[in-house]
Length: 434
Image (cartoon, rainbow, N blue to C red; front, side, top):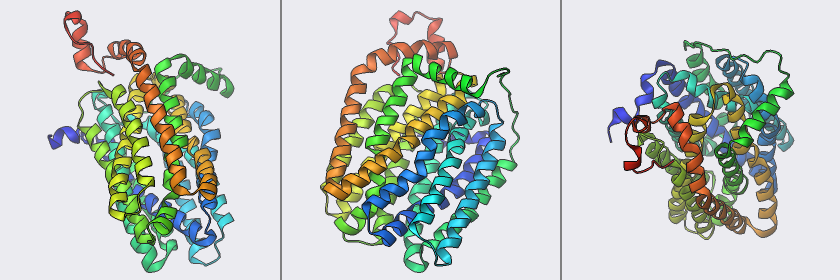
């Protein structure tokens, strides 16, 4: 594997700036995420409260994202992200002040999480749809999305590991403060970009009309609808496993904050490996099969992890869990980004955010409640089984999925091999996979 091929999206100046700034900021974000979970569990000793915190930070995203997508197709995404990142920095400073002053209570954290959930309702779909505006050569889009996932998970690996040490040394408040300062890196990198904003025509269209148009577009095109459904199912039944990590760290594995850091870090290692694997791919062919396989592996690894009482084995299984989860989500993202019309990109990526981030709070609330009643291990068995079934159903529908998506790839000329195949005797070639 050549490094030049793996990092080819970084030859685009704007994306390079975005990548470097986001990497610093995301390390701080993951530090705050771990500190938030540990602080809430320390204050409440309740698995349900962990679920409530996850719910409060993500439920606003579920409701606001569809409307945000309509506005994002009309607004300058670059300026929007500068504003949302600034608001996120303000939230982190507020959390740091409350914790460091010694007056923090759980309800303070719930309100702050609701606030960041509202901000993320605009920020996440804006950043997802903004990627294509930073990449001049569409052939590098898949690599850029995979590198974005790599960056996210490199931060997931580094951030919690640092946070565990910081919490043990000086407490959770410093993690919030460091996160607030880290936002300066991404804000500076965004302001240094040179973006040619392309405005799409939406004259005379009410927001609700734009919302209806986007929903019809996503629903009628079966590949988009199917991918969004898969993301929603795994986000509901699989992704909330992360909120139970403090329970596994303290109650199952008999550890402390550093153990939690190791567990979250192991997820990051696996996810980073998965993202790097996708970044090394030169084509989107085969992603349909990868989506179903990754979903099945994700479910199986969750189930096996739930039985473990050994730290080393738990870490190994979480590496597999993180890898399969990332491969699934990034593959879905890549297919969506490559088949969607530019004028609908903001809306479709807002539905992606709604399915990915918006469904997770319901899962967090369910997981928190189930863990309080039947225990964290049994809760993960339930979630893993659901993911296993979803992946199997997608595999069954894969032939139809491939048949419908192939003409879009031909029309867009996204894959050079397919574009060339139109001019040759295609019946002599093996049909490309999705």
